[in-house]
Image 1 (spheres, rainbow, N blue to C red):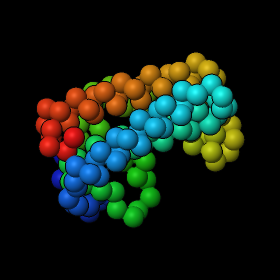
Image 2: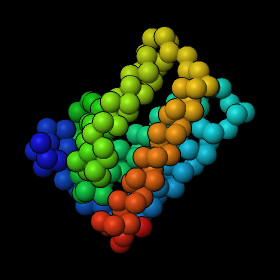
Image 3: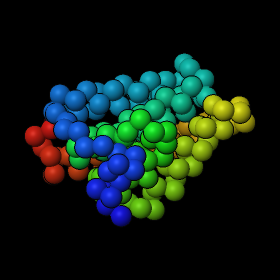
Image 4: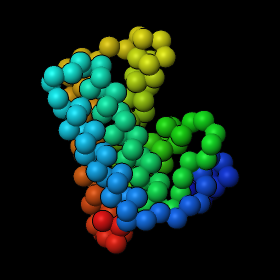
Length: 145
């Protein structure tokens, strides 16, 4: 499967710009910083870290000139395509999907209350993924930085 195979099946072509990518990167950094704050609840910290994770996935699509269409499922699509969009290791995607499931359980039925260890796990993963995205951008699309 390639990203082009998903055109019309959840993704649309849409050009991006350095301004848009820099704006996404700034928001990701702010969310990561906020999620590290011990002044807020573990639940909120997890949610904010997940938002940063999702924005990384969306940024990875945008740097490839793609955007999710108006159908549902853009969270799953943004995370599942990270291997194709920025070469994120396939084995790391299972953990990202687990974070997505945990967040959904907390949001939709209230059954997930993250522990400190779970918040630390998502923060470490998002930090690593952010570094991966920035490194990929420096090599593949330095003009967008």
